[in-house]
Image (cartoon, rainbow, N blue to C red; front, side):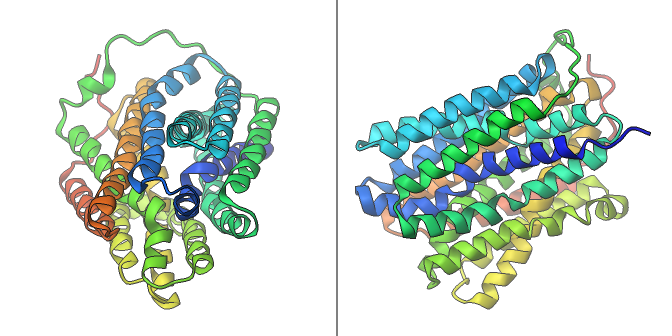
Length: 391
């Protein structure tokens, strides 16, 4: 029996924590300090995050193809170089265009080359004899990203400023990515280029189309939570440190959606489990409107944490039922792109409406409607095996 490579999977888990935490999760804490320090329009500051998420999503299929042909070392080196260059530029920017450029380059590179579509694929290749366990351990590590980064970022911002905070986080992430290039050693078969566009062909099937649209909906709702959870809770009356702590606890509560994963799938199936997760994300959005005290905040933590925590691994499980195994990587890259673009769209829309109306509560409406759409679509999608007809 082969020994489980716990050290390498743990390293991938730390990469996941750093990649998600440095910009994707921390941005919501940095948003108000950036606005107060610079006076820049919120729609453009939020737009930097939105464009970085969109760029990372657009690059996800490329990352998947690179992983099919090369070791993860190439992607981690690219992430270290590009993210540090971009985000350090953003931290030093005294003009809005430079901030947007740095945020987009840095955030997009972390998203494209360090998020789950990369680390989960690498984990499977590191532990081909124990893929389920590898993904389970990896996603449990990933649940700690916001738990660690949100309160740390809030404390650093209050002790220093947003620029110093971002620099500290960037340096730490760069060191993690460089260490991963040494520690992680997977075997990669250089597979020949597949004929045709399997994902586009798969869209001819109703279940795949519904899943793609549902992914977009839950991406919008998740983006609203990730960027605006702290600002909306503070607008509801909570102090910044309390709001950041609850947001971090929400990340920790993602374990509630991952620990019982096998039990849920065995009893409900992957599709129904995803539907439940999407519904929980929607309820989490609605709860943000009422989070003026600790009690409701804790309810938000549990429900939104479960929904977001369960969504990521369940997406991979459900996708494995929809797409052929030999083309799962490219198809997951496309799903990741859809999720990334929609995650960008939600906060971008809220930022524009906030500037126009002076009201951030549009985030509640946008997020809740998008999550409801995603939940409804998953309710009518069929559980189907891999599409063996795709050639």
